[in-house]
Amino acid sequence: MENNLKHRGGNDKVLFIPDHVIDSYVVMKHTHPGHQVFEIGHETFRISTHSDYQSGMQGLFDAIKAEPEHFLGYRDFSLCGTYKGTMMKFDAAGDVMGDTGFLVSYAFPPNRRMGETEWRIDPVFNPSSTFALTYPVSFYSDNPSLIGPEASINQEVHDKIQQECNNRSWMVYDAKSGELSINDFAFGQNQLAAEHEASNMRDGFEIFGSVELKSLPDVIKGITYGVPPPLWYEEPNQLILTQKFSSDMNEKVLEYHKNDLRKIGMGDSLDEALSMNIKSGKPDFKLYSTKEFGEDLAVVTLPYRRSTREGSDMIFRNGMELLVRPKVGDIQRQTFTQDKDIGNITVKNAYNAMQQRSFLLDKDTDTWAYLNFKETDRNGNHPMETVSGYDIRKVVGPLPISDLKDPEKADTLYASLERGNRQHVEVSGKSFFIEALPKYETLRVYTGNLQKSNIEELKKAADLNQSTDQTNNQVQQTTNTQRQRNGQSQS
Image (cartoon, rainbow, N blue to C red):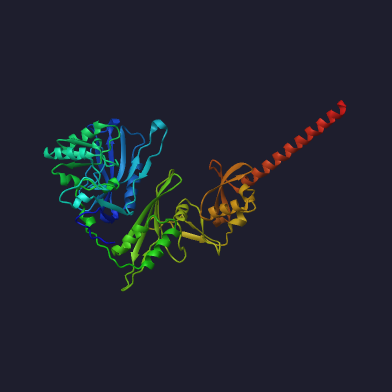
């Protein structure tokens, strides 16, 4: 990636990966008793500090779990990223200031009045994703122009800012607004006064950052347009502007790993991050992603390392690691290594294995894989085991499942079970859930409300329905015969 920025004219965009300039991930707790917005009483606490995104999410999950069931007042948790060499600051609402860090994930407490019992986790954005930081034309101009495709401020705002600059006051603004008008700005003699003024202006005013008004050019430098709020900087972050990227990259290596991401179920969401990390020349790096499986939240970590052999430009992915916060049960963490016996498993395979389910590893040999939860290594991982010769079609095929009557639906059912999914099926109108259980050459069976059952109960549902149908047919035949007799006697 070219990194030579223009100093005159044009809107310059710098593509970067937030994870490259993050010093640490911090779990914060924010309380505001009485649910005040800007009144006195807000408190922000640092709960824990972590070196990487996955550990940070683990810290966020642990903080939520440790929170007492009954709490007084309103509180929430957040995971924030801090920039290298920068002290993180927070505004009056407890939000991290955009020039000192950024919000990664947010945790909302359950609303007891609405009958909620579970905390809600909202991943704001992935620190491995690439972002384009756009500097307006005025950033590099001696005479800042307030009109441009990326920076649009009307004359009323221009005059007001210039006036307030003369008073040496402070300004806050709503960075979420697309077209900034005078109603998106608030001013005060100090930072706190400006924030109070913003809170009183109108409902929904979202303070994003505050700027000390020393001069008009300084103000323009303090406002970055057309990018997400986490990329706001009062001053340009030199760690970003001075990133150096090698122009040499083996395109075959890049394409191989892009295809690999698709094979494991990541699609193209991490393509840009992959390319930039390869170009960076780092000896090792990680890509992150968050995925939802039903009501479970999973953090996926993909570690890469560069070959140390002289002259080699090969890069290897060292398996994957999943951190899962299930709706019910304990937080799970598991590393899946990549070796000749296990091969390339998908993220969905890995998640299903962590839920004590089995998945098809090799179709040619009917080899299935599953985690042995009875054993744990020193790193807390469960070993992966395999079993061969289990044909899911022979096990499921004879069962009286409704979808098996349709060849297309039957293929969909088999494919889902092979991925390790728990699959809903119907037997004579009655609901069941089934999972492959190759270790014992059978199936796990649950009732429609997920109570443990078995294959025999599933079969009985069909027999009972058949018996009921036969009884109904007999009753109907007896009724018809009686009607015929009655008709003959009347004649």
